[in-house]
Every structure is written in structure tokens, then in C-alpha cells.
Amino acid sequence: MVSNYNHRHGDVIRDKRDKIPKGQHHLHRLTTKEPPSLLEVYILEHLQTMYASRYSNGTIQHRRFGLLLLLDWCDERGIESPLELTRALMERFQRYVGQYRNRNTGKPVAINTLSGMLVNVRMFFLWLERREYIPKNPAIDLKIVSTGRRLPRNILKEEEAERILSEPDLETPYGIRDRVILELFYSTGIRCFELQKLKLSDIDFTNRTVFIREGKRRQDRMIPVSSRALDWMRKYAEDVRPGLVSLPDDGYIFLTNTGKPMHTSQIIAMTSKYRERSGVEKQGSTHMFRHTTATLMLDNGADIRYIQEMLGHRRLNSTQIYTHVAISKLKEVYDKTHPAEQKKGKRPKSSKPKSFQENDSNTS
Image 1 (cartoon, rainbow, N blue to C red):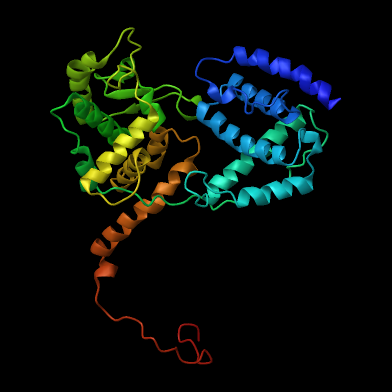
Image 2 (image 1 turned 120 degrees about the vertical axis):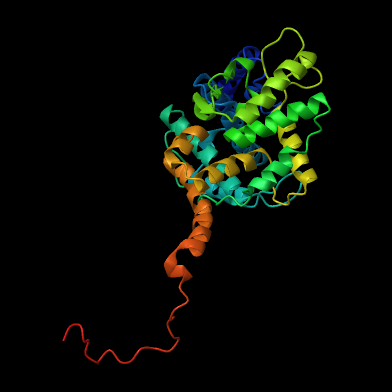
């Protein structure tokens, strides 16, 4: 029965592959096996369902990676159907994931990354169960280890941020383009993929705002931007971009030397290059500016709810992580300004107090 199901669905997958939207390579076949296993058929259907439900490409790619890991593990053991997977086998898979190493560096993968892989696998089996493709969910007991939210360690000081921003060569068109990118990261806390998708029509020079189209979870938002960033943007739009654009012009702001929109990997590499060149020793790239923007705004008295809106966080607790970082500045100010901290009066001795058997004069 499973074999016939494989042949029938192999034709369906080949038909669906021809209809995959341009650029959606993460929806293509995961293996070259013919016919595809039932497990691969279900994985592809799951990913295509996510795409139809307008999940972001990044979310689909992460889900695909975790499920490809499962598919490879099952293929090595001759497992072709999710119906063959038991709780005991899924526990073995969990141990396998726990020992997973980066294939390029050979180094252990961060615990949060491993947990993300297991979350994606568990979500897939939950989908199978809801579709009634399996009678029982074997992944229900997969333990997702969480280390909690880590405090950002790469918060830039104002002078460090300015050093990075001053690195691009402003005598060249690409240096001006890069300066605009850095200014936007610093002044708005925008995500890299959000910046990469920006179009000229998203910039409102009059009201000093940037419109973010389909940010994380495909949510739109309008955020303020500094006048300095807009001055650089205007110079780039008027003096540089016309010399880079190739027809037809899709309106994307940041272009390469071929006139095509910059890729997120190029933006990340560019930001890292300037950070290294500036001599700033803190590690990080584009997201470092996001952490910095939120923390510096809190330091300077911004209401956390406004920062939540600006960063595009759905939950306030995603933004509250920055309050733990900003508290260090509060402690510094407290130590310098509060009278009780400034007093050099009597301090407690290290010796223990007398016996509690003595009467308390305040209560006797």
C-alpha cells in the first residue's frame, strides 16, 4: 500500500514542482530518490502548505532544514514512512540531534539552534496528526531544551557606533550606499531582511518615516528615522542610485554594481567588514545595531512600549530583554547621584549581632 502511495504521490510532487513560484527553491525536492518516500512527500506538502499560508521564506527554510535532517536520518535506517516512526525511534533521533555538528566547521551547534531543529520536527508531526496522516504523534514527547533569552552582549557605545558609521569611503558611490545602510540600521533598529526589501516609495522624507512592508510574521509597520539618515538617503537617491539602477527599475533602494537588489548576505558581510575595520572588538553585524538602538533609547528614557512598536515585536517580553541591559546604565547613574550611595557614613561590621534573647527596646 505504501509503495502505491509513493508512486501516486511522486506524480503529484512532480506536478507541484513545475508550479513552484520563482525563487522558492526551498519547496523543491529534498532528494533525487525516485519515487520519493512517503516521508518526503509529506514534508514537501507541509512546506507548500506553509508557503500557501504566507509564512516567511526564512521560517520555511528553517523548517525545511530540520526536516531534511530527519529525512536523512530516516533514509540511513531505511525508514520511508512516518507510520514507521515510534516514540523510541524519535528519542534516538533526539539524541542524534543533540550530537549534531556544523558540517562546515565541525563545531558543536548552539543549544538554541538544536532546540529549534526539534521544534520544527515536532510541528511537522503535529501537522501530520491534524491532517490524520498518522494515527498517533510519535514526536509528542520530544524534549525542547531552552536556555531562555540570552542578554545581548554586543551593545555598542555611542562612540563605537559612530566609528563604524564613519568607515565607508564617501568618495565612492558604494561607500555612500553603505553609509546609508549603516545609518538606517543605527537610527531605526530595522532587521536586515526588512532593509533589503525597502523601496524608494517606502521612504517619506517629509514626515521622516520608513514603511516596513511585511516584516517578521508579514506584519507592516511605520517607524521614524533620523534626519541625518534621511540626508544621506537623499544624497544616495539623487546622486548614486541613478547610476546603479538597471531597467526595468523595481524601486529597490540598495543595489549592487549590476543594478540588482543587494542580498542579505552581502549586507551582513558589508556591515561586519566595517565593524572589523573600525577596531570595535565586539562581535556582531546587522543585528548588533538593532540591540544597540533599543538599549540606547531605553537609556535615554524611551517608553518600552514605543520601542516594542519600533522593533516590530509582537510580545512585550521580546523587548523587555533590553531593560536588563539598560539597567547597568541606571546603576551607574544611581551610584553617582543617589545621596545614600554617596554617604561615607557608618557601614555594618562583619561581626555577628548579639543574642536575640535580649529584649527589643522598641517592643518591650
